Length: 320
Ligand SMILES: Cc1cc2nc3c(=O)[nH]c(=O)nc-3n(C[C@H](O)[C@H](O)[C@H](O)COP(=O)(O)OP(=O)(O)OC[C@H]3O[C@@H](n4cnc5c(N)ncnc54)[C@H](O)[C@@H]3O)c2cc1C
Image 1: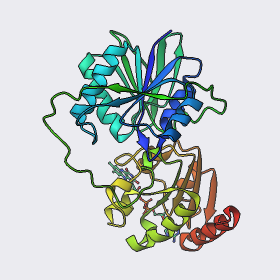
Image 2 (image 1 turned 90 degrees about the vertical axis):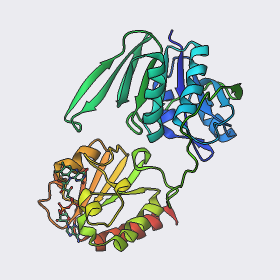
Image 3 (image 1 turned 90 degrees about the horizontal axis):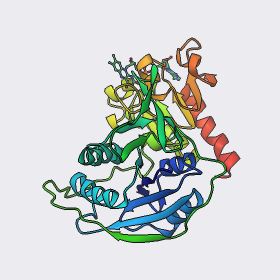
Image 4 (image 1 turned 180 degrees about the vertical axis):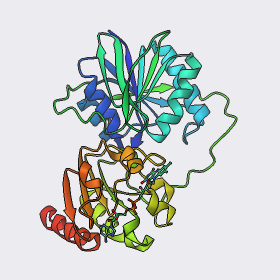
């Protein structure tokens, strides 16, 4: 059976959800997990619940902040010593930056941003969307191992019946090697919320928001239901929201459980970034808006009336 490693990142005291999705999908295989730095007990418990057989906390000098070279060197050494056949990670901002660098060090094959996969015996086969989700490619990996795979957050979903694994993390010394470009400071955005690509619920606003200050009503709804706020390109181009919030072909690709589109027409380029959301709710004054052809639930009405009503209703339901 293949020897599998999942590289994980932490979000506060917990691991990022995509790690648990990957572990759930790999149920039945022996899977080790590694993170750079100390792993809090809550994260260890989550990993154990979802089947990690061993949990490695990789420690060494110059690894306190993310450094593409340092992390890649450290992970390369650890993977080589562990003789892994497969290395998985989330297709997060960090995962998309780091894993190709490590794969290059091994001159190994890599499947990027798969949205589903199976492991038959020790053979990986995955699917990944191409051309903004218009078609899917089947990806198989050949050549020398280890093979590398990044998985798009929220694409697999959590395994409802995970098989539990080990309970404790062990420290392993790793070497960050020579670092020629060092990140001096990471300035966090104002929001502590999950990045759009990892969010489970997204509330997005379009051109109909009219001005940046009006995004406040989306923030209020998002705070009540634990969502991250996104935007259409028209809203971004109009200066209502920063580009980091843009969903779509030239923005972020998201796959939340719930996507609430407020005053967004549903142009093909917007749909390209959110069409794989599990449930889509659209609020639009125009009953013929294209977004309604993709929406599971549609509300024909003025978002400035509907959104505050929804916020109040959720507050009542959730006792907030
Ligand atoms: C190469 C290329 C790349 C692109 N990439 C992206 C991308 O990544 N993401 C993206 O989003 N777009 C992208 N676009 C732009 C895309 O084509 C659309 O122009 C854009 O998505 C429209 O944004 P919108 O729906 O907010 O605005 P509009 O199309 O203007 O729609 C506004 C909607 O709000 C409704 N409305 C108005 N007032 C209210 C109200 N009070 N309450 C409720 N509803 C109301 C209207 O009925 C309308 O349907 C791209 C375009 C190109 C050419």
